[in-house]
Image (cartoon, rainbow, N blue to C red):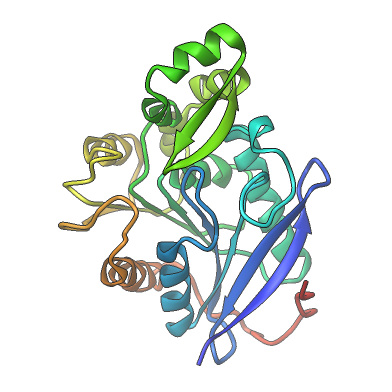
Length: 267
């Protein structure tokens, strides 16, 4: 049976970020870093299902809460796409310092765009997989409706996301407008796996086509059939994990000494 271990690490701003490592029952074949969707958390059902399914296949997975979300410190109103990328780099650095470098980057929705952008700063990552990812970080602004104009006029506004209230500031809109996800995909130079549901009503499947066109080979696309954006059916989440594990095996080798190096400190 796999096991879960709570960990903490600091981001660039010195804020404590909360994470969970889902460990396989034997020495890991590889380590993966998982980035959750916009305004979600590491404890979203899909994040848990994917991470635990990967651990059952021998891949240890660190999933964590971006600053201002879940159990992590920070004010969500002060975060943006760039800070999410910085948080991913901080998580990867945490693993590297424990001699457990992440060779696989996985991102869901906006987290997928973030891992593509972060990959250029993580040379140790050998493969990148994204699920329901937008080709443009500014895509999330569609969720704000008329509030986007209010944010621009007033400097900030309360926005309802998945039924929860969040304060968003103009700096967030400015930041996502400047993100260049397709440019990052073109410069990735790592194997890229794109998983997307044709009927995704949050991030349309044409985003997958744009990412695929921008990326260089080796690149792959897998349809998630009738899954929804959040992979609320655990069978869809586990299918995604199965595909990622099989695909990543081509690019990630088992380390010579899987048990060497210091242990990751629990929270």
